[in-house]
Length: 341
Figure (cartoon, rainbow, N blue to C red):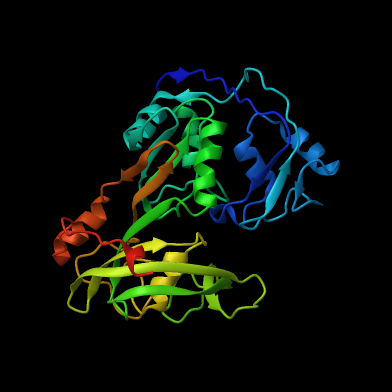
């Protein structure tokens, strides 16, 4: 491996805080969510804060394994001023080069990465390499602002400090951050544009299409009042079609539910091409790679006293190939989907 860089994590946080859980963090364990925000606090200290009731969710005591829901408030007690953290894991030169290669924007507060397909944002079972674990390669104190699915590419924001994370995070929590996704669908959505909304919750993938992932967890549409159901809204429009075989769809999620866009496109009769979980019995259009065709194309973030920050990520190779193959022209003007709503 290449050389290593010794990094110190310095975070200044004091006083009682109340943080609102963003929708993209729904389903996270309380203890892991806390550690992502305050990595300098030892695990034993977190357990003590929970045991003594100093760390609370919606005003109530909670255990570390509590699964958070979007919109919940978490009381953060006064935390000690950290000092330089020693004996931290080394950061390898190869990781520094890799992470720097993903950077498409940088200022004093934020990095914007163009996350590649197949790289997880956070760790989990059998996931050793992920963006969260590689953040020290960008500098001390970096933390994720939001998340993307493993197989979704595109704009991913990383804050350089706790203060920047709080500022950017509020924009997502207050629905002021505007995210636009591009997708190639297997078939054409019907209707071709509009708003799709309804309730969704966790379910289990069936074996209708001989899917090798049958039995795995997926999101399913349900009626209001179903246990665990959450409301989801997506604006979308079809910009171009390749007959009835495929379409280029622009999507703007107004909520941040897990797999929201993937489920919504399936419900419109045109799931995203190459989606292994939200499928159709139609074969994949010829010449397209069998991987998810969903890309977080852009984010617009409001800034106080300054122009909005707009960041756009180039298409990944497999989607650029699909656009070329299907005759979609990326120079087409993109309409403001909110104009009609």
